[in-house]
Amino acid sequence: MKKSLLAVAIAALVPGAVMAQTNVTLFGVADVGLTQRKGDGNGSVTGLGSSLFSSSRFGVRGVEDLGGGLRAGFWLEAGYNMDTAFGQTSSTNNQANGASGAAAAVNGLTFNRRATASLMGGFGEVRMGRDYVPVFWNHTLFDPFGTVGIGAATASTARLLDGAVANNAAGTAVTGVRASNSIGYLLPGGLGGLYGQAMYAFGENPSNAGATKNDGKYMGVRLGFAQGPFDVAAGYGKVDFAAGDVTNTNIAGAYTFGPAKIMAQLNNQENKQVTQGGQKQRDILIGATYAMGATTLRASLIDSKVSDLVGTTGAREGARRYTIGVSQALSKRTNLFAAYGVTDNKGSDTAFSNGRAVGATNLGGKTSGFDLGVAHSF
Image 1 (cartoon, rainbow, N blue to C red):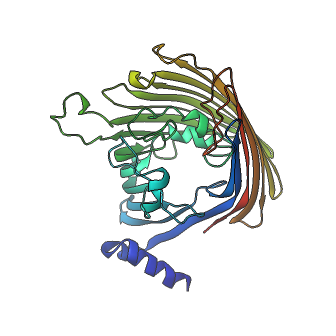
Image 2 (cartoon, helix red, strand yellow; image 1 turned 60 degrees about the vertical axis):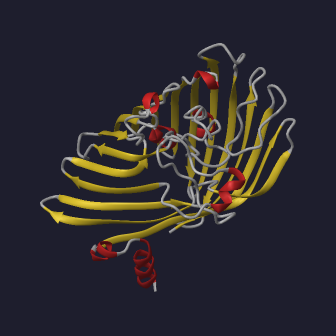
């Protein structure tokens, strides 16, 4: 039954040559739960949410041995929402995401999370297509809550990334997580703990577009070292816009001792688009996990400071976020989870909230919320 379902899925998604491959895997995650978000002066919303513990996704991937140590592979991965069954948005040119808000109801399933073809060997891996940008891995791998749910640090640490792009609110991060039209290179294993990734992505504008011909062009790099209980990495990414570039630089690390793991991040973002205020932001994250058999405790603290690059939009402050959570593994593939978080805006700021949240409207107000649900991987 499993093999027949796999064959049907592959035939429907990837016709022709893929069927000749001998190593093809169907995979995914179904994550759904009860969620509440509220903000001072702005009420609350309670309902179902998706991707609260692990991103809901559906994909197919495969590898073919070409001989002589050379392999070819493909990876197609689509994000979707369990609570609505709608697909998630993507970007064709790294300049604006697809429909959002009410218009997102028309979204079908697309391979927005990753769509790549690769050549792999002793030299490393060369990928082409839509893929994760190098700097993103420091955001997610060194965060006790990854990048989803009430604890997702990226609600703060990726808030400025491409937030000034037309049709996108702060935090949409067109190239903060992934880039379309990309060519990437990953270092091979066996380098004594050294690892790394580099990427170039095209904005695909006409050469006669004038000042905007390079809009959406992305360049990024990440270099890390992992050995024993230590893991540390630094990353840099930049997306070009005639109105002003958007950059993200970060360094992150983790240390594991017994059942405990501590993590830390330092992130710096700059959005130089003066028409949108021209902001820069510094974020510090400190977090930890502690495993007790099938139970894992999680906690994080994030301190954010925002200031204007041009002094035209008034004072910026920042926020401090606190999140605690717990997960219970029912099996290797199924987890129950719960998390609670509070974001306390500093001074007169109202810009920060907990993930896809109801923001505060009171100056210096708080936002808070919880997630409670189940995640199953296959």
